Structures are given as structure tokens and as C-alpha cells.
Image (cartoon, rainbow, N blue to C red; front, side):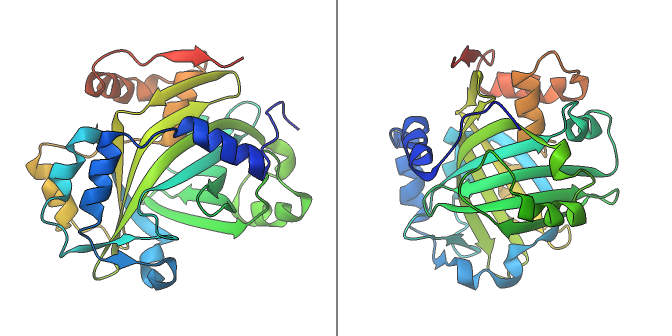
Length: 284
């Protein structure tokens, strides 16, 4: 079905060690700050899982994150999984041979889908997920737990895709691999989650690119509420919402031959934040 390397559990662990070899000073500082927040477990998330939500995204230099977290300890709890508050993720995005899902974004379609398999590297839990955004800007996520091997979709998962995606298993191919770390804050009323992603690395099996100095903040709310304490911190720091999609940015970086005019302004903004051009390197 594809030419990407088979990812079994042992291989994933080795790859994770190479992508995240050392916790740098910035991440240690983040960990120290997060220790000031009360924890919340996966079992306690409840309505804060927000599988049907509105999303607002922001990007900024990751060395600014401590300023934005200052004073929020009474408003949010931090998700803790098996003792970890900064967790490692790996996601494989699927698309058609002609990049149909990417083209929906490039063309500004009001209805857009993403199909992906995500592994929580600390626990080795793995899910097949479909994200759908409608023309009212609401996002709905559906998912089922799957085998840890990521680079193929099993036949018995086709029913899930048929029910939630406009494309079948036979039409989909792995296109992009993304590695990153994530911290999740949960507002005390359960109506908002904030995910903080950094150490972002992309690969298509041949070329690799990283945006490791970037922080992607995503505020997920049941209903949009500008009174969010985290939004207020970002506004105070001069950070405004940005239309950032991990998948679309990754495709734009690693498949430059595909038309991606819609994403050039955000790529330019990212380059400015990181202090220069974004470079790719061959892995094969």
C-alpha cells in the first residue's frame, strides 16, 4: 500500500529517542512551571474531551511560553499521564494519491477532513482518527483504538472510515509523519482545553524538516469564548490567532511541488519567528 518503513513498537521507541534525545533547558523550565499546576487525569477529563468543538490556534516562539503561563495556576489543571506532563506524540497523516484532503484546505473548502493515526509514545496507545471541520468552523473528531503499527490501516477499520470519512481505506496512503511533544491544560469548568505543542519534526520518509523553536497553542472550546484566561495572556503578549495546520504546513514544506499558495503567508511568519529560512534535510 505504501513505501514507508514499517513502524512496530520497538522501532517507534528507538525513533522517539532519536527525535527527542535530550530534554533541553527550555523543556526543563516548562516542566518546573507545570509542576505548579494541579493535575487532572484522563479519567477525569469528562466533558473536557471536547470531541465536538471550536478551535483557535496561535503560534509563537517556544521560549515565550513561561510568560504566557504566568498566573494561570488557579484557572487550569494540567493533564498528567503516567506521571508525565510533557508527553511525546507521533502522528501519521493519510491522504489520497492526489492529496485530496490537502487540496480542500488549499482551495478554502468550507468542509474539510483529515485522516490520521496517532501514537501516544509514553503509553504506546494508538488511535485511528478522523477530523472534520464544517462550514460553521466547528470541528468534530471521531476515533477508535488500533494496533500500534502505524503505517497501514487494517481491513476491520474500514467501516470506521466509511462512516466518518469521504474516502475509503483503498484510496488512502500515508503521506506525512509528525513527531512533537504536547502539554494539555484543562480549564477548571471543563469547557476549554489548551494544547501546547513543540519540538515539531516532519518526515515523508525521504526528507525531514523541523520547527523545534516553534510553539503551537490550540484552544479548544465547546463554544467560542473570548474570555479565556489563556487567550487574554496571549493578547497581552501581542500574539494573535494564526491559521496553523500541522498537516498542511508539513505538506507545504516537504512537497514543495504541490501548489500551496494559501500557506505561504503562515510559512513566512514561521520563518520570521524562527529567525531565518526553514531548511529540509534528506534522510535517505
